[in-house]
Length: 316
Image 1 (cartoon, rainbow, N blue to C red):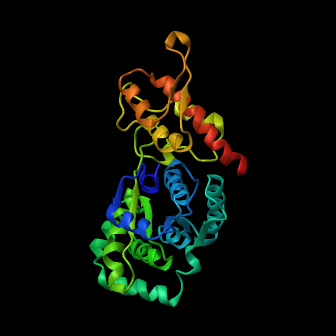
Image 2 (image 1 turned 135 degrees about the horizontal axis):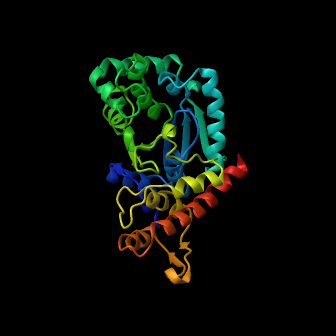
Image 3 (image 1 turned 180 degrees about the vertical axis):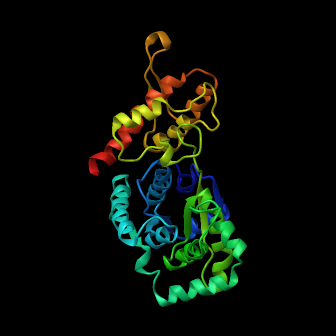
C-alpha cells in the first residue's frame, strides 16, 4: 500500500486530497495531530483515530497528541486536578495501543495555552468570529449543547489556534470535528498562520446499533476484561446480510483488518468449515450474500478484538 493510500484508508473525508498529495510529495515528514479531552476511559472511538495516527507514523509523518486538559475543563469534564490524572492515564493507553513513545510528541494544552500570546490570539479570533459560528462549531462536541456556557464558545477558537501553535500541517479528528476544523481553515490565515489540511474519521454506532455512549454500555474500553468484551460482542446488533450501520462489521473494518492482513472465521464442518478472508471487502461481500452467519461473525470479532486488546491490557 502506498503512503497516500495508507494515510487515507478508512477516512471519511480529506479536506483537501489535492493539498494532502502536494504536502506528501513536497515533505517526507509532514506533521499531524489529534487532540483528546482527558475525560474518562479510552475506548474504540478513540482507537479509530489512534489507528490512523499509527498509519501516519508508518507513512513518515511526525505525530503530536494533544492532551487537551484545558479544553476538558472548559467542557466541564472535571477539576484541573482530576483531569491531570486522567491525562496521564490516557497517555499510557495511547502508547499501549501502539503509538511509538519515541516518535510521538505528547503535549498538555496548559503547557502553552495560558501564555499571553496565545490568549491574545484567542481574543483576536473572538473578534472575528460570530457567536452563531462558534456555537455551531460546538454542536457535535459540547456537553451542554442545549444550554452552552460561555467557556464552550471559547473552546472552538482555542482548538483552531492549537493547530497553529503546535505547528502541524494536518489536523485529524472525527467527522464531528469538521465545523471546528473549517473554522480553523478559514480563520487562521487572517492571523498570519497557515490553513491546515484536515483528515476526518467516521463516527461509529455503539454495539447496540444506537449512538455510542459509555452510559449505555454499548462501547468497549481498551483495557476492558476479555470476558466483558466477548459478552458485549455476542449481544451486539448484527442483522443477517445487512452491511450498512452494522457495528460488528465495523469492528473488522476499522480495527481488526487494521492489524491483520487476513482473518479466519472458525465454523463446524457441517456449517461449511473454517473460512479465511484476505480483505474486509471480501468479508463484507460474503456476509451480504448470507454466506457468513452473524453468530460466526461475532465469535470471530470477539476473538480478534481480544487479541488486539490483550496487548493493551498487558501493558496497562
